[in-house]
Image 1 (cartoon, rainbow, N blue to C red):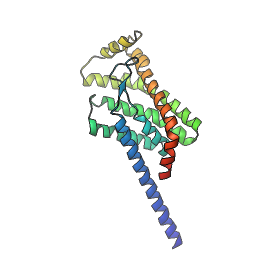
Image 2: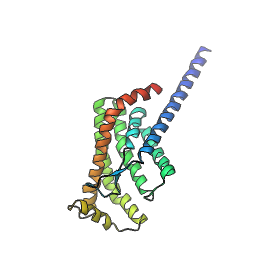
Image 3: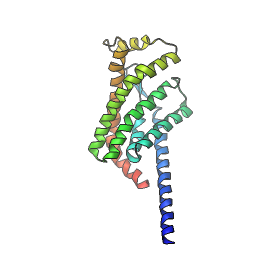
Image 4: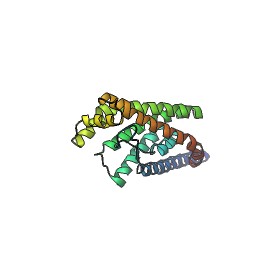
Length: 212
């Protein structure tokens, strides 16, 4: 009887822990979706249709607390909530870009921090995630996202180059556009998000871990 009681208690505790993780992930996803409403361009780096938001902050905090799988789930839920609440003005291309770049950023950072939960590994993980996001942005924009955007809005690919060269005269083709505009944009985003998460995570993690 005592063994059965222990098993039941263990199962109940496991269920409660999973439920609490689900609730925390849902709350952080909702916060991330809300932050997607506040976007700012970086016109000195990239054309105005590239907009910076801070929706990766709650996702990365959740990734550090719950793990990389939950981070991917939160990225997806964030995008779905944004679709429901605001719709899309980019034929879904902007949202796909946000999801893919977000995963490229938060997954390496969350994986490394899960391996060693130390501040130095959090910093290293965010650094690797920032670089991974910039590299992913170069290839995905060149071969998937920009062609999809151009097809959706029936515009020539040369239009992106022209917009980029208006900001940086060194941009004279698609390759230089993604290297000199898209990559720096994502590097700036990754650095800003990393700085904010670095200062926010510890106080928030105490609250999160007290619930799981």
